[in-house]
Length: 194
Image 1 (tube, rainbow, N blue to C red):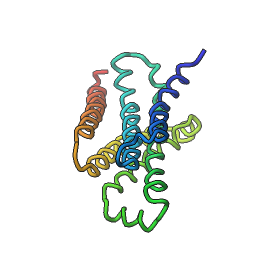
Image 2 (cartoon, rainbow, N blue to C red):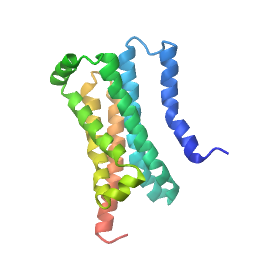
Image 3 (cartoon, rainbow, N blue to C red):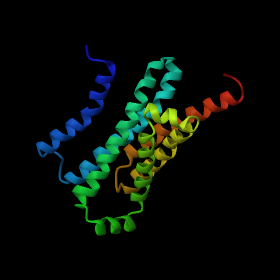
């Protein structure tokens, strides 16, 4: 029998499979490179949101089983962000560092993407159990980097768009609600109501 974790992993890989099918069938639209960027970036942000959503879901439902998936969703966010970056470096710019440097100077939104990627990479590196054990009390502090990572991801998303802002506004509202939940839970604990 297939485990729940295996099913979750397969579900997390489905967007990549669908993207691969679209690449194979030349179904990425008029600007395939831009489409690749957007879809991979979107999925990285979605998994970041799912990671953040675990705590509120657990608190509301009282189901502790969700914690098992936090690491998986976080690592998926890192994986999709890595692919997003690789498409930019390899497909978009063919590792032409001069072009990449010019792009970095002319497009400040890229810096926010870089900052987000560095934070998500830090979270991915420190996510295994042995890292948690080694870092001790610092592990939790390091994993609070998910909050600035979300902010940088949203700035990166908003700033690079030239038209439709519906999706970034949706993600901003969603992340805002997930952060608000944490602030309210923290205030409740501070006042000794829990």
